[in-house]
Amino acid sequence: MDNSFASLPPAFYTRLMPTPLPAPYLVAVSAPAAELVGLTPAQVADSLDVLIGNAAPERALPLAAVYSGHQFGVWAGQLGDGRAMLFGDVATAEGPMELQWKGAGLTPYSRMGDGRAVLRSSIREFLCSEAMHGLGIPTSRALSVAGSDQGVMRETVETSAVVVRMAPTFVRFGSFEHWFYRNKNDELKILADYVIDRFYPALREEENPYQALLAEVTRRTAHMIAHWQAVGFMHGVMNTDNMSILGLTLDYGPFGFMEAFDSDHICNHTDQQGRYSYANQPQVGHWNCYALGQALLPLIGEVEATQAALDVYQPAFAAKMDELLRAKLGLSQLEQHTDADRALFDAMFALMDANHVDFTLFFRRLSGLKAADASGDEPLRDLFIDRPAFDAWAVQYRARLQAEASNDAARKLAMNKVNPKYVLRNYLAQIAIEKAQNKDFTEVERLLSVLQRPYDEQPEHDQYAALPPDWASHLEVSCSS
Image 1 (cartoon, rainbow, N blue to C red):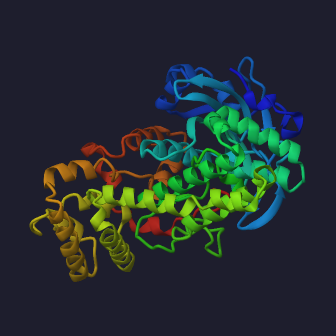
Image 2 (image 1 turned 135 degrees about the horizontal axis):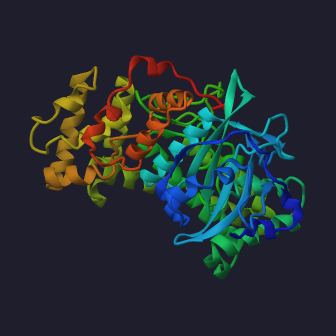
């Protein structure tokens, strides 16, 4: 184990040990995440004291990092790892991977918080991190979740838990904003050089490496959010302190996967103004890149060069979104159909919006349509209230399929590789959480197993792909989630 972040000057972090929790118990381990860091699930399970933060691995250098950020569009000043502690990084086949406790106790950056995470939110983060990886979306990972019966106060008294999460780095946009707003250009440069040398070494060859860094992060952010939109994922708290410098989905809190489609849906009950609605995510991602660009301006040197890097966002997002939607609809990229395809996509989303069609089921069932006739339409058509409107759109879709002589069998196979059958619906997470609160972790394990193969049919688990029950629409998640 190493800790490259600890090689930065002391101003970047505070060294400290986690606060122990009594009588820890293991909730779940992700076997693929364990394999990534060279461990078996059994080896992870045997390290319970490390997983809960009651002990540190040999050569670990636990620390909490400082950063700042904009929260809901407002400058919030200094933030930092208020309940997270980085304890080191390990070499993997995919490069260095940092390991971090989340919920391991108070740090100098906890502000008014208690430094703890609750079992409910920890299970949600654990499951969603691994579910997003299964979907092929850039994300931090989760190695384990462990619990303790020690109580913590949220809306009510809940029990404590710790997630061990993993990412190549947890440096975020707010890490750069912290130094910019303190006029600490030396520290700003140290951090930028660290990120470039460790994660973007090819950028050293560019004429202006800092401009190239901003452009690359902007591009990755645009692509990440296009992936979110394509599966109906809503982050819920896209503050600049929750935005990864590597374009990874980071800090799972009040997230949600779209069910009854509503482009203005707000998954975070705390977000009263709807800043982070599904429809707003792309433009908020762009706004956040501007905040990063502002922070990097002293290093880039020119406003025009900074703007040029930020101009990468819109075309990168549009191109990735077109690519993902064509794949979801089983269409080849034909240049002469670009404008018509975008009109087809727009009409599709308007139709889904008007009928509040289940997002995941729509795209999964779409693969059953035939190019030549409507004989396979019923499973999809039945999701719509306005079925004549669906029929009219299906005519346009079939015409597009016929224009490229699409083969039904091959198209269905390809579409089912990009349109998941299973996503982490909030009600599924809630069922697993309620069982876990009674020390039954079987549903967490079963749900994890299903979500790690979201594109496979798994007929024995069809119930996880069904329309949500009525009570699911009343579930609310907030920043405390």
